[in-house]
Amino acid sequence: MTFGEFLEALSGADISVLAGFDASAPAFAALDPAVKRKWTQAHRVYYGATKFTRKQADARELAAGMPLDQICLIERKLAAVGDAAERWRLRLELLRFRGSYKALSQRIDDTVTTPKPTPKKQCRFSSSRAGMRSVSLTYAERDIADLEHLLRSLIDPSLPAAEQMADALVRLLRGEEGGVPHAVPRPIVLVPLPEWTRIQSGAGEEVQLVLTDGTTMSGAEFLAREFGAELEVAAFHPAEGAVNLYRTQRFANDKQRTLASMMSPTCPLPGCRHGADHCETHHVTAWRHGGETNLNNLVPLCRYHNGTNDDDPWMVRRGRICIRDGTPVWVSPNGYEVPNDTPGAMQLLFGA
Image 1 (cartoon, rainbow, N blue to C red):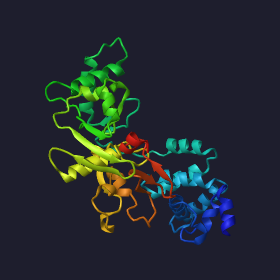
Image 2 (image 1 turned 90 degrees about the horizontal axis):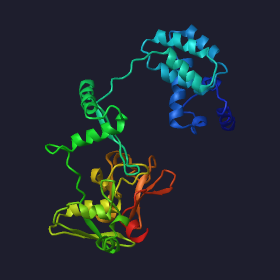
Image 3 (image 1 turned 30 degrees about the vertical axis):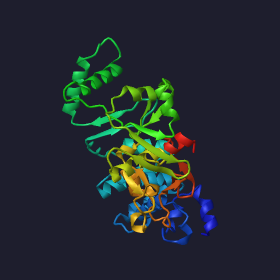
Image 4 (image 1 turned 45 degrees about the vertical axis):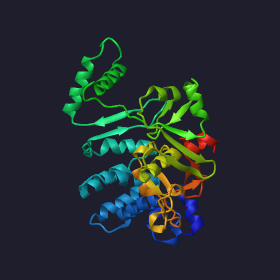
């Protein structure tokens, strides 16, 4: 099969493509790695060595004409079946099915019984949407049952329960003794000061401030909070970005992390919800490549994206962070620059 014939056959590929499949062959180089893995698994089942040779031959005969994506679906879901003989029995049964991909998937779910993995304890938080966030908690059933029982005892049963229980839970979390404290953002004034002047003049409701935990607050809310006595002032150059941070005490590492978070209040990868306060400090030019710990080389990245960033610019896999005109941007593996959705200091001050 030529490369052109191969690409033409992909749209209607069936088991005949697997007969000569070799993941290392140049003709298959254009395949997505995930597709290669699926086809390699299917090739091993239908054409590889096995002691179930008669069943393998029957399977190839039954699979004739079935779309290859459906064959791969069967193999992916049968991987959870431990006994080899049982896998072959189920495989032959499922290969007799003719229908859509969705119908086959449902048929497999109805036919193949696999144990569900035990849920793990976890607590997850969503990104903000219209001023609201969600929290999901998976924990021991007895503890969750106790919590639900308590919350239901604190609401009016004649009214819808969900919103009432949410309010009751927050009241418990905000209890006077041992309750969850309010996250206290550090008050930062950016120079130049037009927005600060508007807040001071009484127009605070119209001013929106971005915080380094990924949330926002109005200028009026800013004034209403008790931030303590220390006031910080940061200066920004319209092209170079952060210049310096002046404080009553000098802590270079804190200064750099704070300014980096002001340049990017959240992890700048598209769709990432992590605020800069919960990020690691990333060197745009990696330390091992001579990158310095200077403001023009530091960007807050969440732990996951800090680990997947292409630190070696000549090794293109997952994309990398760059700084353009003082602002962090993500550059995709194809070279497209995607700015952060959450505006940082440069956008707020200069409309960059």
